[in-house]
Image (cartoon, rainbow, N blue to C red; front, side, top):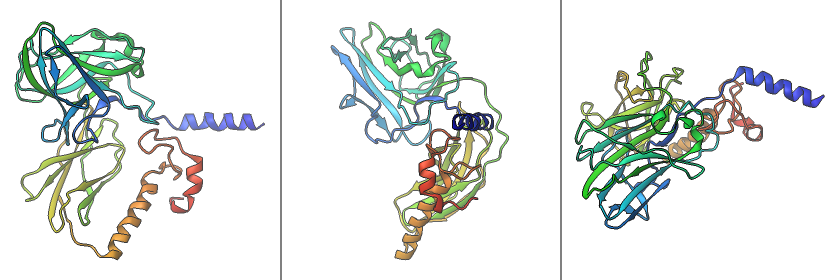
Length: 344
């Protein structure tokens, strides 16, 4: 009898909820400031790539989407070879993916000579490699989007992106040269079609604390929106991008590390090819010194928001993974924090 009941519950739940599908993303931002943990570099002969502990370098001053990118400062050599592996980070709960019809990445190069630019290929989880594709650029020292049809690399990956372990950039054959490139926003995506974003971005609140500002906007329901892009200004005129946030998260903490300063913000929406919507209206907040009581209230608010924002919206119960499955709840965690949630 119990098995029949459980089956019925599972079937009814599957009819009501369809899990969020993610792009199979290899790099957007590195949490480590100096080098990128998920990957490695190897070289032979006089060929080389600047690295730290065989890890790719991270550049915080140059990026396509804020706040950093991968830096490949390399030396090609006829008597050697270099390779840079950018591995997929397996995130618990992120296990439903869109079809992998295209490899998409953004690149900026000091030189646009195709004979010295690296080739790109896939490394599979079984240790095999796809075909190699030459990179061709039309611009120098400007960010450019490269879209490669998966059929020209490995068509078997289209329905099974989880079979890809790493994106590999390699030295072209028979070349004695050097160059510097930056890589950002590397992912396997389902379409190269520009999506129409009809939603108008709006910051609903901006609250300053001692060394950071909390921004919040209304939950996003437009599936064409992948990221929210955050801009900051210190004079209400000159705005610089300071971060991006996943569309299913409706807040952003901007750590300015300065007290007693006014900041102004705008946000925009991005699709998966980083086409940008119009900007929101300006909202301002000021960081300030805080009393012990205000600091305690800040911690209490943040603790409450952890459970509030991490709850499944229909039931109010805790998600199994805040940044993973959006429709799976954790019964144990829901029982523990039941007293914290006042949705129902």
